[in-house]
Image 1 (cartoon, each protein chain N blue to C red):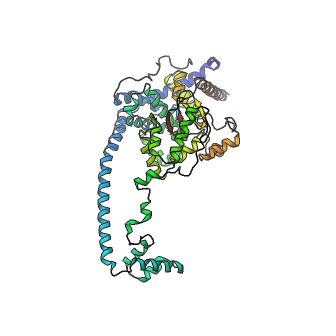
Image 2: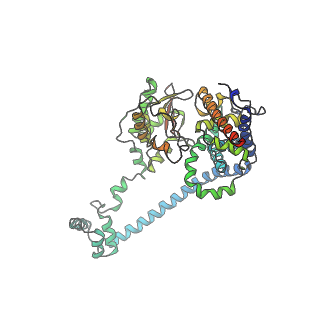
Image 3: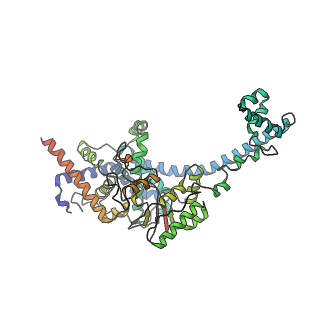
Length: 306
Length: 179
């Protein structure tokens, strides 16, 4: 495979184009860019105390508001319908099939409305703060520890052929399904990489899950697809992360075409339509999450392509 | 290595040297702008991509500066951003274009070079990355392979196919011009 096969004129043109690009890039305002990049870091550092301060203020304000509302509710409780009666009223309304809001607005005061709106969530003592929905909110850090998107999934981790590696992968998947954050952390290598920009994988993933992401579900799914071996990083799931591009045959990997399409579908990708899509230059291969475990069984990364 | 690559280019110092982030930035930022432009084919956003990569480096400087080859890490991040940025920027391109045109400092290619870039854009993402690292920085196939996490033999194949494709396209263009 000799480069001498190539025409020297065109080789010069290509080479010249890259050299010109490099020369042009040296003219960009590096110091201005440096200022932007360092400011960005400083600003984000300054943001943390500001966020803490704002959070404290918000908590105080909410506490005050809750106190005022509670006082108001207590003051008016004698003149309003008792909670048990309210439940009964609501039940009657629901049996009648009428709109609760309509009936209550017919019935009385603003306070009545407010109480009725929440009455289906009140406990026996009529204490709105014991609302079970609030108690189960994902905003509660304690509950974030207990639940995650991988709950209910089964461990179908794809064997790599190495017992050490497979044992680690299986332990990782088990921990993910159990939403065992400490367990996941204990399985990570010291230099574990979650994604570019993320030092604290568990913190990142908890944030992801709390914000409606399903990163642990993704982890379990990725682990269920066959792996490939990388010279530099050991075993990597899924196999098609760097071995398949648009235009390649669907059965060019270690699985049948059907299996390949099914595996990609698990990760929300259609290798046929996505490649044909808007511009095949945009999607040329798998850019999503991948798991890396070294030959020695060290879990070194769970990263996405960008 | 191809004769087309300038002999004056020295082999990239991927290996760690003790430096401050600022000193490292000044040395590497223009190269990342060029790499981002070459891989994404988008000069307008190349500086944004390079700045994003340098920001990531800044956040992880304590860790990455201890790596044996921080330059390899930085190039991989830049290439990944340049590849993924195509999706990201497409959706916002229309709204963004005017502002970025005003801010873009990287000059647009000459008409001669435009031919080349037009065909570079048609290469696969891996080919664009291999060719960029090879032509821009004169990296060995071993270094290119390490950055892209592929085998050196695979990098060689990507480079050969990319060059083959570019040469045939350019020769066709020259023939059309001569006719």
